[in-house]
Amino acid sequence: MFNPFVPGFAEYPYEEYRIQREAEPIQQTPFGPWIVFNHAESVQLLRDVTLSVDVRKAIEILGEDPRDRAKMRAELFPDKAPREDTSILNIDPPDHTRLRKLVSSVFTPRRVADLAPMIERIVDEHLDAVAGGEQMDLIADLAFPLPFAVISEMLGMPDGDSAQLREWSHALVKILDFTIGPEELVAAVTAGEHLRQHIAEVIEWKRSNLGDDLLSALILAEDNGDVLSDTELLDQVNVLFIAGHETTVNLIGNGTWALLQNRDQLELLRDDPSVEATAIDELLRYDSPVQISRRITLEPIELAGHEIPAGVFVLTSLGSANHDPAAFGPTADQLDLRRADAARHLAFGSGTHHCLGASLARLEGTIAITRLIRRFPELKAVGVPAWNGRLVLRGMDSLQLSLR
Image (cartoon, rainbow, N blue to C red; front, side, top):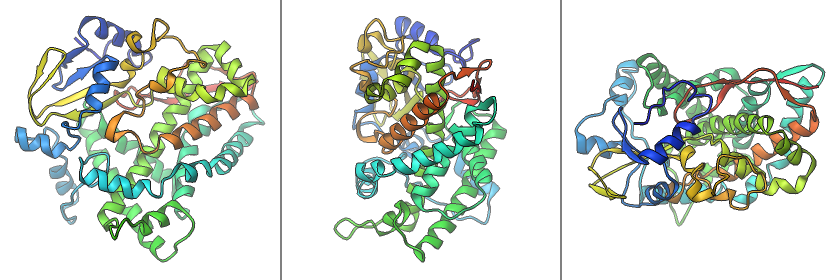
């Protein structure tokens, strides 16, 4: 049975995933939800339009919420009115379809591509800051501040307390893990409320200070008379801010560590720009920033001979699916930056809820990692990463690097 607490899992979960794929690729976990480890059934689930991402629907079926965040929020913030979650991460069609269309109308591939010079500038500024020394902490000095600076500039957010905002973001994403403890859950709910309040104030300021930025475009977004309500706008900006930060931190950290562990591949990417076309997708496949995605059954389903009841969470192990030899061949556990089918990975999910910010994450990851290894061609790890130990958002808290 799947055990994410076996020694060494945080450092390298893929051996445990291999064991599960070979023994019982579809199973019910000790902590309740079902989980799927192979690629084919993961794709099937992620693209199944009869499944839900809306936790409220599971509560309606089961009649309970084991963590009851709404009740906790009411106790922590008694002066705040109850609110409905309208983020595109947590709602189903047709509401999801409508909101995604509005957000996609301004979050276009061209707008993302136009961000490249700005991202390059920010990366170079952070690399300049450490260039005079012997070492750097990849996470603190580059991976963590970069996506925060990019999303803030992209949204046109006024200067604020960046350290405080990053702290709230870091605390909030822990709520995704099923193993979160009571104290962390309180901290996450509290951080989420503070972050929403800050973003609400920024939106109010932006309405009177419109500019050539994504937040202004979202405020003005319109489709045949349809516009984002105040709550919908706040929830989508909140998602862009959170999802646009933490996952990219993990991509830069995990991708750089993978290259350092496979020196031939690092040197290939460092010396041959033509590899960039496939490199970032292979890094995403090899050590995915997001390891688990979830769906909720609204009615009983049959999956590869297993009967799964209604009202339960079904998790897709994206990290395991991305190492499935049935999808990627006998070299699935190896890093190959020239892998022709690397883009078949599930690091961004699949189907209706495929990550809206995938192109931005690819762009940031490519620029950050390639400029880092080309700026410091003798880059080496000092010791091993301090992994964050999370089940959903796999990443590290620190990685010391020698620059010379």
